[in-house]
View (tube, rainbow, N blue to C red):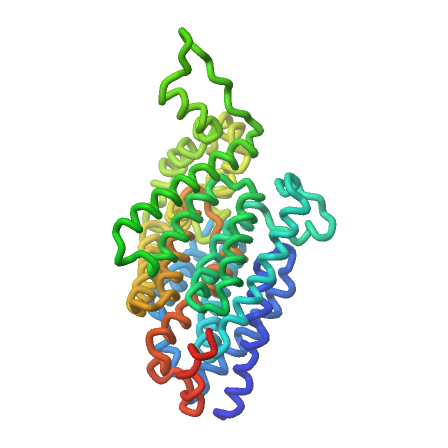
Length: 439
């Protein structure tokens, strides 16, 4: 039984690299579903293998089970049960399978950098596609090859944020620094080409957390790096806003032979950001959803990202709908949308799950480790990116938990090559030499 289980577990060696690649693209649902079947086979085999710990000792089992149970219960009182059940599969079950599948594979792989190389290839292709079709990525995009496989700009920029921590973790290893640095550069270019205004705050937070091992003992370096990265992030946010709104800086007006003061210079420098904030309708429909959501504050209207929009569509003010055509789809904030779907109880379970993930990364952080900070950067970047929108849906949700599982395995093995008996006894020697092989 043990030999057969170990053989079946090899399905993860096929499924995870496939998922790592195709999740970065759109219109790959069939391939994703086939890979998830293999992930399920591999997870079940690992659960039956004597060389693996009991599933009860897998990471995040309890908070993941609580989150899954409550969201499934929300299907019972959902205003659209079919939509809720499919959302439960897409946003809870499949991501949980991917999380444990990538974690299991990461605990066994000695050459883990090769798996991240698959992600690097996908990011290089996306960067090339972004350069080739610069200015044509905003919807509606042409339904032709290769743009057919370019996901929407919001989702693609989110996936780029999720990929950066994996590349940052590679920077510790000299042989892989070229892959890590070029991977981060590709992700930044993908975000720039998407013209997503909120990519840059997320990228800044992600990189600042991921690079903590560089400057955690040097306060002045921390302050200087934070200021430089912050200014660069603000500059790129301004550039993206101007390109998206197609505006130029107003000309300086001289009064009595003098150019305007600092306030006028600052207003001129940040004209794109200023117009973005003035034209943004999010505060208004956040207030709207808070008001209508109080009727179901404890239990929500049913699980699924589109459920609040479907449930409260008839109550949407006409003037608000004219300002923002996507206001009826969801609340454009991850936690607000979760509260609307699952109520206070569901929001508490989601916060507990994310806090448990962050705490697990922190527990495995060593002074010389880059993988645990990379895991924390993944969580921080996801939270920042979803403060003004909700991209945790289908492939982006799947990618977040898959990358989290891999980063957790890498952090665990960096802290303990034997990983508390998770690696089979016959493979312990190879595991102890994993770092010698440079990831």
